[in-house]
Length: 47
Image (cartoon, rainbow, N blue to C red; front, side, top):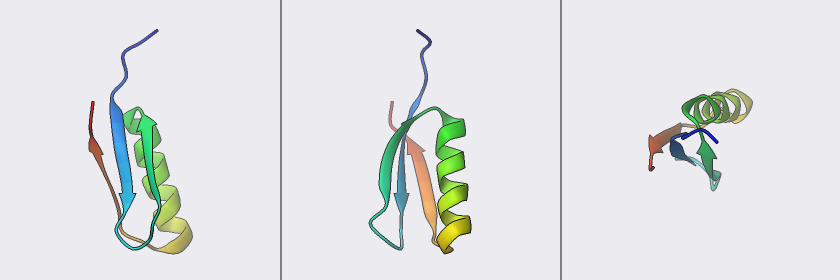
């Protein structure tokens, strides 16, 4: 098993929120949600 960082992803315009493993997954979730609905989405490393 590899050590991966954990990220908290949150939308500032709706109730979408998620915890994901890996920066690439967080970036993908942010890009997908922003492209789909045009919301402001952010993520931060939590572990």
